[in-house]
Image 1 (tube, rainbow, N blue to C red):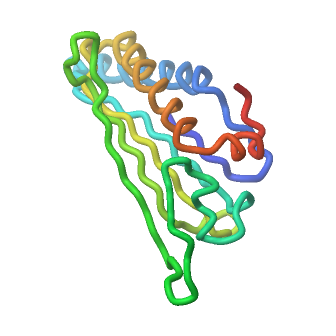
Image 2: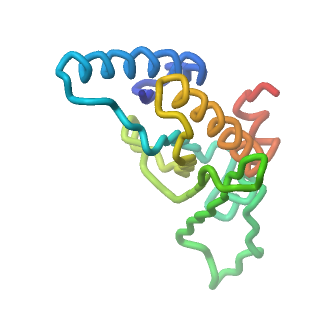
Amino acid sequence: RSWRRNAEGNSYPAYSALKERFRYDFELFQQAVQDEQLGPIVVDQCELTYVDHILEEGTKNFQDVAQVFSCWSWPKPSQTLQPENASFKTSFRLVDDENKPVARLTVTCGRGIRLSDCKQVLVLTTIARGRPSKTNVAGVLEFLDLLQKPAVDLFVAITHSRMHTLWGKKS
C-alpha cells in the first residue's frame, strides 16, 4: 500500500492508517487467491519504503546540505572547488534479540526534481526489507511494525533538529 502527495496540502497519513489499508488489501488479495484455488500465499520478503522530498527551504545552496543532515560534513568550499552534486548511501543490518540478522535498512540521498512543481529537492529514500518469520497477515503486519520504528528513528537521527523545527515535527 502506498501513498503519494499529489498536491500541496495533502497531509501525510499516519503509518497506522496505511497499515490498516494494507491489511484490508492483503486480505482481499488472499481471498481472491483462495477463491481461484491458486494455493497458499507464501510471503518471503517484506519492504517498507519512505521517500522524502526535502526542499531546500532550510539551505541557501548545495554547500548548506550539512545543515539538513547531521551525518553530512563538507569542508568550506573555495572559489575553485564548489560541489556540483553528491549523494550518499548507507546500509544497516537489523538484528533480533539473539543478534541474528532479520532485515536490512538502507538510506540513500541524492538530488532530484519534484514532478508536481519542478522544484529541485533532496530525495531521501529509506528502505527496510527482510523476511518475516510468519507469512500470515498478522505475521506480515508484525514484521512491518518491526521495520517501521528503525526507519523512522534513522530519519530523525540523520536530520538536524533545526530542520525538525522548520518542518513542524512533533517529538
